[in-house]
Amino acid sequence: MTALEEVGHPDEGRTLDMAAAAQSSAEYLAINRNGKVLVMMMDGELLTETRRSWRLFTRSVRRRSC
Image 1 (cartoon, rainbow, N blue to C red):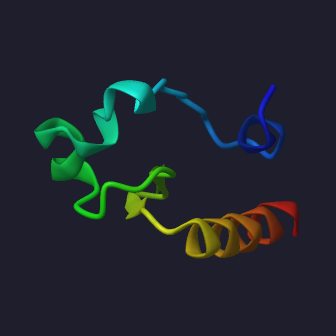
Image 2 (tube, helix red, strand yellow):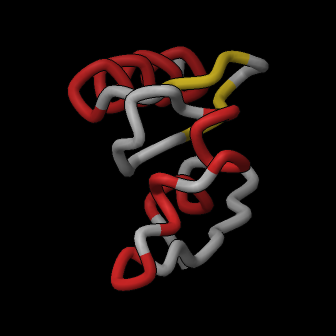
């Protein structure tokens, strides 16, 4: 179980082959133009920056636990 699942967010993990530079593929760059990994969709918003992703995640957890 992932941290997302623990707090009630559905989690659909996908593997990205970084050895094959999958983060530089046209398909991935269409999702995240920076070509960086972590990409997360939360509450309909695409999050591509780790710090911002965790900030929104913790806010969401707080809202759900109140």
